[in-house]
Length: 144
Image (cartoon, rainbow, N blue to C red; front, side, top):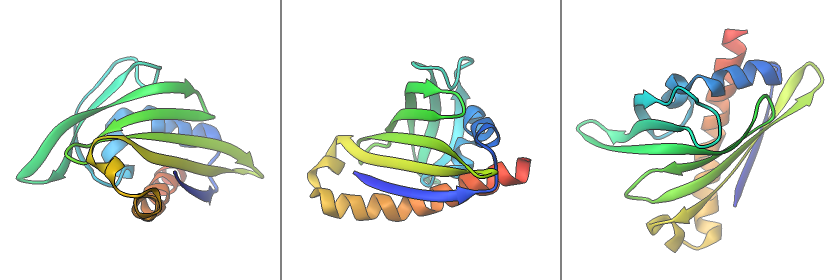
């Protein structure tokens, strides 16, 4: 499992506001390119984001579902990104000083992505999630 952390000046509530706006998903998730629909109950457990991955014109439509949601603290997702497969992503927001420590943990749970040895897939996931957390922090700070 890959784990990344980043400090942001935004509060947990400000970060949660970004996470709770499903239409912003491709703005902070590396690889997601456009939104097609967001369930009205997002980010409640069981709700879905309907997004596309890839680069035009080679886009694939997929979905991400919330497995667990604790407002301003935790969001656990099952993210689909075929043809690579599915991943479990856990975002934790930990208050730190006036800001937030953002923690993202991710690993492949199904599909071809599981075939890569854990150390290999962990490096590629961690590398991508450095940018994912940077984008999330910038959005939260910019909206505050």
